[in-house]
Length: 126
Image (cartoon, rainbow, N blue to C red; front, side):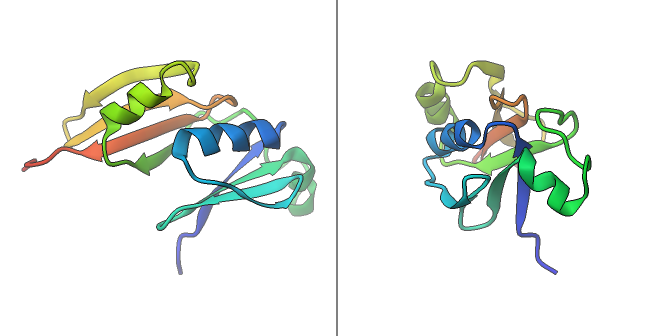
């Protein structure tokens, strides 16, 4: 078994794809107007519209209703990323902070309210 992707259901695919393209620097690959993927070396972030939900099971997912998952991206320099995203990201949850487990993290919300964590491991952690 391989973990392949996380899929976000949204009411506005183009808006959310545009946000993640700008935030990550990764260009999306579009399958349809209702589905796009941002693929990195280690995983894929899939973004799908609400019209795709009934194909799985009607009512099984709702857009902008995540309260438990944090979408995480490993970045080279979280402080530099923070400077780049200032003025673009509307909802920073925290500024770059060094966590007890050794990551320097930047937590913010995407336009649908999903939590996103960009992090950089701190050199020399024990």
